[in-house]
Structures are given as C-alpha cells and as structure tokens.
Image 1 (spheres, helix red, strand yellow):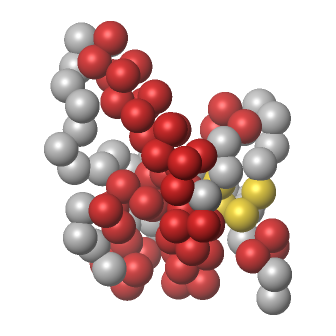
Image 2 (tube, rainbow, N blue to C red):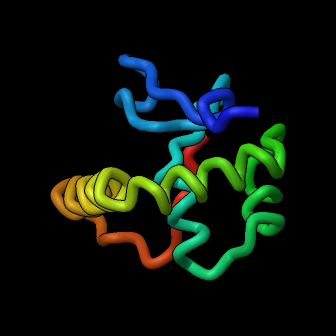
Image 3 (cartoon, rainbow, N blue to C red):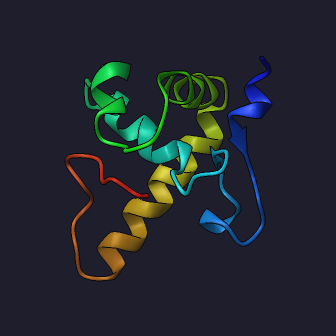
Length: 95
C-alpha cells in the first residue's frame, strides 16, 4: 500500500495541511506526540478510529518532510502565543 493512501492534503480541511486520509488528524499533531517520546502504539490510543498503519504513515511523512511539518508546528505555537496562551509543552489532540 502506498503512503498516499494514508496521508492527504485537501484545501479547506485542516488548513490544507497534511493529515490522515478520511480524518481530521493533522500529521503535525501525531508528530508532536512522537517528539514527546510517545511510541506509535501509545499515540494510537489517543486517536479513536485511527489505525496503527496510519500512525506509522504520519510519523514517516513527518520524518521525510521535517521542514514542512516543523514549520507547521512552529506556526501553531506562534499562533497559540499570540492568542494569549503558551507554546505547548505537550502535544494537543486535534481531531
């Protein structure tokens, strides 16, 4: 199976960012958990209905596209700070 079956970009859905196909789960959200030390099986528990293959695909996509996903994470953190919050120490679940 091709990774393109798991990861898609759709204008108007999740801001056009890479996400799990047929879900509103951005790759950046999965990758935040991974960067915080969570393993794929642990991350899977955070997203009801997701499959382990989708979680691995998101991590693989993020690792292969570090500049893109890193920029998304930085943008999310900047926006959060501008809106009066703090950059997240732990990843947020975006579904």
